[in-house]
Image (cartoon, rainbow, N blue to C red; front, side):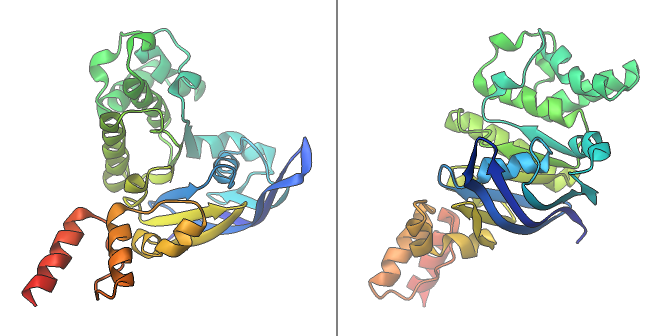
Length: 279
């Protein structure tokens, strides 16, 4: 598959603390159309990694290429940010206009598009996230979940090839998280938008094609969700949690039961138990 994102030997040190290396020897490729989840404890380097992808920050050492464009080259800055859109934890930090319509139009206006093209993109993006009925509403009158969907629509209106979401559901209730996750999954499967999703919720992380586990500024694990989360002992050592199903099967295997260790969902667990009972 074509690599959309490529990092080689990347390190990042904060300018106000050169002794604190936030990222160490990061080497990773992300293909166009992949859905990547990123997990890790606080301070593990997840958000620093995310900001490198949009050239918000530049590496202290190494190479970051987005669609072949080196982030060190200032002439590529605008094209990189058109390619990779960012959605942050708190939507209030991204919403700046008086109405939903105006806020979603802000990005396309900066692209220098025609008025008709801007209007079309605003309508399409809001429809995509289920917020087209709120075009004339002030964002101040929306719930946090609705604001996050507006923030996502604002990024979609820019037509990015990749969307990076930095704990974008952490301030939402379970229903709000579920709504946003359904939208993100659809954008990936139907529109082939590359998704890089930083989350603290394992039930969200298992929806990805691939999981990157960050620890102390390094990528500790990089594999599919089944292999990552079935490695319960390693996940626990890193101070993280795995799915309840993986935890259950891990404990049963310690008691001597011969059961699969790479199951993550309740549906998978029920199927496995039925097979054992019928054998």
